[in-house]
Image (cartoon, rainbow, N blue to C red; front, side):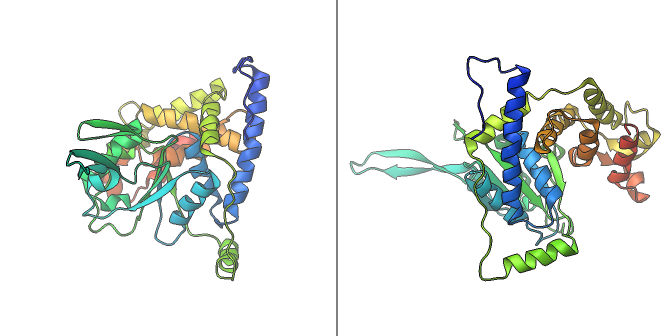
Length: 338
């Protein structure tokens, strides 16, 4: 169990905070070890996904099929002790297929009444597989759930379980018949996690571990209530003035209307809003605790700049025509902090 401070003690007491952060760091190390028994060669993906969950947010996993995105979500559900469900998004998927619907039932005495049947969104960890294949109507049905942790059906509001997180996936190479996510929904994802191919050693280890008579199973290392406590602790981690200034310079410098960087003004159509700074602040705290450190650094800001910013900004037409990539613009922004 994560150590919880005595109610009589001041939660902001430095000694108490250090003790709680160290206890959480030890538990998170066990979480990473348990996930590592099942997921091979995706350390950065696992780290960024855990950072998202510790920050209380949602993640968009982008990668070609077959890289273990579904396996990662299943493994995290088991390791974190969360109720996990998966929805395969298709063009004919309706909002009721995700949120649930009301059905008319008749009792033995002939009385009729509506009963709400909960959809798969009523879980703690929802995998929205190939989210961009669903229609905008269905995508928007998930928006309220992601932002408000509740859904409204037939005028009734239903609260979702706590914690509640969405890990959505996208295939970046097959875009025919898809509906690109609107900017408002993209902004709801704390991080965009790029899932790449594993290296040769990791792929070799995966082959040996997954094609034998026995396959490793994830071991639970945390629970839902403990994850909620960890999220509350992350918000209490102090952030130095230098890190705060780096976050503001990075986010504000990415807006073409006010940026002092010529490349940003010339190449971006729009930049990130204040939610990007909020996401970066939480994510840097979570990354420091995950690494066993008690305070975030500018290195955390630089490491998380791409997953926080790349889905919150867009190149203009001329930059795309010239072959400019968002990673190059973000690299220019990061160079201002180095």
